[in-house]
Amino acid sequence: MLKICQKLLKPSIKRFTASYSYSTAKESKIEIDGHSINYIKEGIGDHHVLCFPGALGTIWSDFKPQVENLDKDKFCVIAFDPPGYGFSRPPDKSFGTDFYEKDAEIAYKLMKKLGIKKFSLLGWSDGGISSIILSANYPDSVKKLVIWGANSYILPEEINTYEKLRDISKWSDKMKAPLIKLYGEDGLKTLWNNWCDTLIEIAKKGGNICKNKLDYIQCPTFILHGSKDPMIAGEHPEFLLKNIKNAKIKIFPEGKHNIHLRYADEFNKAVTQFLLE
Image 1 (tube, rainbow, N blue to C red):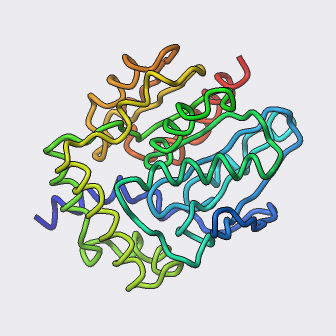
Image 2 (image 1 turned 60 degrees about the vertical axis):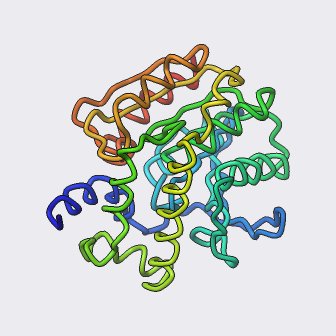
């Protein structure tokens, strides 16, 4: 079992081991619905792009190659730590089966407070799910949607994946160290267990996360997928492709969950082309 867990964990948690060295981007705080949201805004382009991190993710753990390397003359890149993660604390994350909706609402209000009326979304994993919801809830505000590592429902067999990921004592030190530095060991255990419990609760209630939102997305959508992603079954990106109007897909044959980090140059090039076309 340990070997199975390690095999699953390495690709799916590899994103957490991304460098935490910060660039010259200046982080700021803004108050939204009782949360002090940590964010950055970089670039002078008139196309605003919001980067939406995944579970436990932050600006730098999840989007360093995009924040630093997307063309700042063409884009204005905004990235943030979702409420309860990273430096958007205290308070710590308050999970519930509606946390994707709540995160989407915070992200929308962040952009409005920054005075940005229309923007594109880059959403990874949990951030991809919340980006789907945001795009559906506020179609007039979203120019284009880019998602990867995201799913609109949970398969019954995926409960086993979450259970295998639960025990952080089975993670390698390399995987744990950045997160322990950020959250503390007890804090990491609590956050991660709460995340696992929430996903399992959603699964046991039928597994629907945001299937009912897909038909409301109006913007052009770009789905990217790593064929060897251990967290996302192959049927998920295909379902999104079939059920989102004006969607297209790009497959990374050797990609896992973190294609935007592992294949950053190719990813950024494809996303840039899509956003500008």
